[in-house]
Image 1: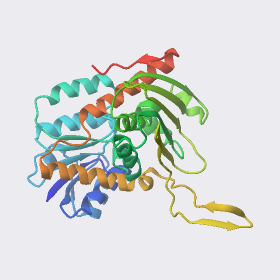
Image 2 (image 1 turned 60 degrees about the horizontal axis):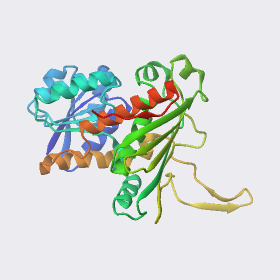
Image 3 (image 1 turned 90 degrees about the horizontal axis):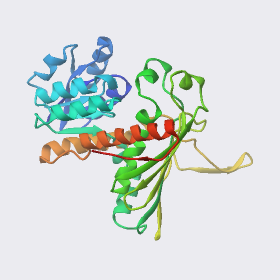
Length: 334
């Protein structure tokens, strides 16, 4: 039985705690949040205890692993505290929005032999994963084009989340950069990004963008296209398409049902897309936690490493540089 401390019990931390509590070989022992009432409410739901003392939680005998779902600007501190306590870590993405803090964290982690998995949950989505596996098997032949569409139903609350998230490329596109690396099975070497403000003036006020198109070239010559928007009026739009000389594989959007309706009101009408990321990626979050627990039980390295998180953020930084300077940028992972 792997006993977890969940650090951060906002909407995603609460979901993680619920998923852990449903596993046959895991449980939640402790919940922490700066909002004590929120931590207590989540703890009561999953049969855990709540505390506002992180150090006490990390020193508790009934904590075997830590799940970090706190605000991004606390991730590095909590990663290092957990590593120092010798606790395996599953941390939500990103490591931080400041690449310098990520590099410093990377160096300090060299002193600890603690498993750490980054929360790029979309790798565990059954549909997206099937695309990556099909590409790896050569079903489409040598990969020529990879197209990733990732459009949110709406932006997060302006304050404080938007102010702290690091902008579109570090907050949203970082998932797509990781997905590109996952499906490609190789590294992007060049990137060109265009972006605009088309959704809400708040993004321009925060020196951010809300709409973007990114093109990347991989080591093999395969081309990647990513398109992002902070708004759709039809639900959470999440698609991955891999194309090669032998065909195409595609991960399509999800709906509550796959029923089609035919009537005088319309032909082949279908349910709207799932609207919220927790609904759309519930199976992915479950798969992520199962994989992390499995890695601990089997003594194998986590499937998604700190380095994966670092490289996705470096791609975000390269995209920002490309957008600001309006030119292609060579990606450097050193």
